[in-house]
Length: 109
Image (cartoon, rainbow, N blue to C red; front, side, top):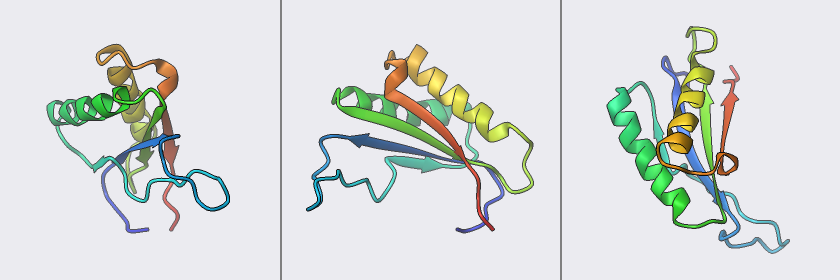
């Protein structure tokens, strides 16, 4: 994985609409719906709005907010950003709390 100095946030959609592999397991997306680093809250809200619209478009979709800790970043910064993003999507875009999942991932060196 490439080193990065800021928090990286990826928005991923997973749902049963994905075509199955030959073994019957759903295929996972190979690219995120959206991905960004350090941006203004105004720009982040616009991206989260698009993410929410996509989640709303199909009740079988689950939206994942994946955040990666910044190298040398403040402890808890990535988690705080993920919680803020989920809270915005749930409270302001009215997506059910159980259709948006956040995870903090750590970068392996």
